[in-house]
Length: 130
Image (cartoon, rainbow, N blue to C red; front, side, top):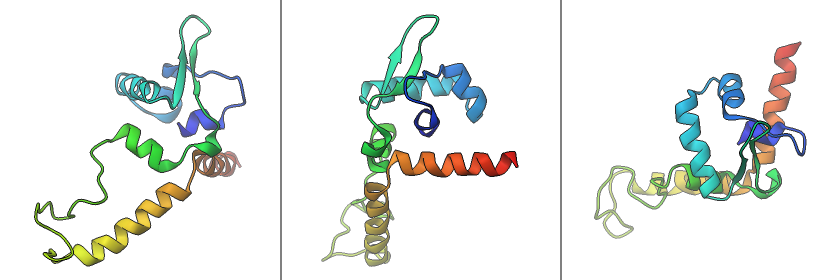
């Protein structure tokens, strides 16, 4: 998604191109891309000039949206130790610290956008070319 967000408007990227540039196994990437398309985060176009593009502007896609689309097992409300009975009234040893951390992580994911990631990726790429 970050790679797609760095592309100029209207430019499509193929799975093989993304896999090569981002060093991701193409078979794995295809599965991720299919899932992102099903979730409505990217669009795919078939054919010789086909490829992938973002379905929405990068500044409208939060990192929480991406995490939820890619890994639906992430649950910030669950006990960090995996206990079923963990609650404010019946707290595990890490409950209160985890509550604070998960709040910070959730806030960061909700406040950060794909555009933010793309900006950092482009700055990093520029520095590595110098």
